Image (cartoon, rainbow, N blue to C red; front, side):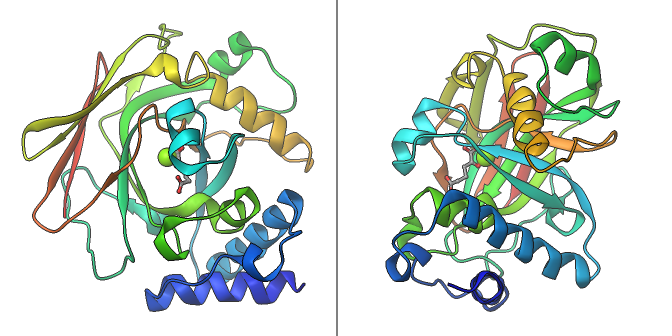
Length: 254
Ligand code: OOG
Ligand code: MG
């Protein structure tokens, strides 16, 4: 099993907008650790083309996502500047295989955070918070994968949009209504409590996972906390808006 050839396969699938078989079809014993090694090699390819690392996304932090995707533990992926779309802007379907969208909360880190931390310590390292949209686009056929596959595929990441950022003063985010609207009509509703009880837990989990690789969450990083609800498939003509109680809204047009 070649880490770099799997990374190349995923990279090419994304660039050519062509889905591939999941890696575990060929290598059934692929481990989650190998999945992260492939993810890392994939990110190195992106960075070598001039993309800049701007943060992280947590995935599968809610039970509804884990059920939808049939996987059972939270994972992380990397966000680059090329994935960022401005609020209200257009998302192109041509560059994507079968995109879906999730309403999320995003954090902006005001300080570095490292290692095993409490919720309080995580909260203190956060300087900003906003409503966000996470556009996912698995490179695997029919959006079907196992845990090592989706980790290797950088957590299905494709694009993200941030709403206007409010400064974070330790306000309670553990019980906020999350709503996804399409062309003005509500299609999904959830609550931030579904995200491990509190979306700030995603930062605690990320800090813990990065520490295993002797890395920290750097000041200035964006962190997507993971979806509280199932993802919604995108189609041309959709105007998608996430509304998060107390945090405002954010949108994109397909
Ligand atoms: C993996 C990415 C999951 C989330 O918020 O849980 C994710 C997938 O479902 O394809 O972004
Ligand atoms: Mg997500």
